[in-house]
Image (cartoon, rainbow, N blue to C red; front, top):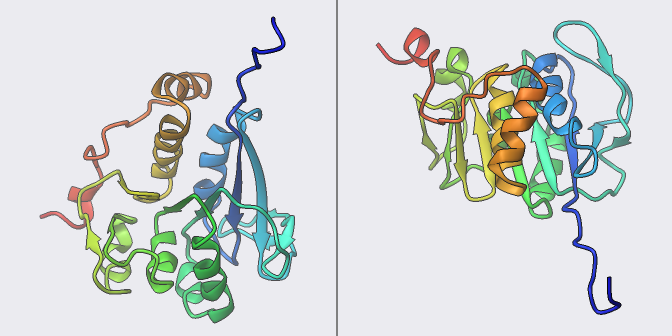
Length: 213
């Protein structure tokens, strides 16, 4: 290789996951299973309000790398949902932190009722979005000027990705991988995890059970 030729750079992104009490475990671990398969591209870190371990709704705790008072680089902000979302939207410190981070992050993602936190922070204003269909009516009552999709596995609007609940976060993460890298990589990642990727955002098999009658 001549000196004038350079080695192509590998796209690299830092993912910051917000942990709060009673988050849903799969809404964190599912997406991170996909991103974690590609360690050359994605560096994963956890943040909690005080930088302490946080208990999921299912019981196991995850250990935070930072508190919201530490400064750190974030390319992709991921906000899970869970039973604790109702309490989290009343936490002005977390909501203020989300507002600040949204101006710095290249991409903002929520899974399930994590969209409630984004809505409370004003991040979804004038955006298309979706959420957990079991909690659809509650979440869509938060915030204003949001174009909520009652039938959508996941929704992309500019740099904001939102998904339906729980396992839908895996489909969202694969959509993000397809966006940042390419669709072939996303498909290979799903196959590696033996996961059938719902890559059609309008394919929402659970919406009829809860919000479409």
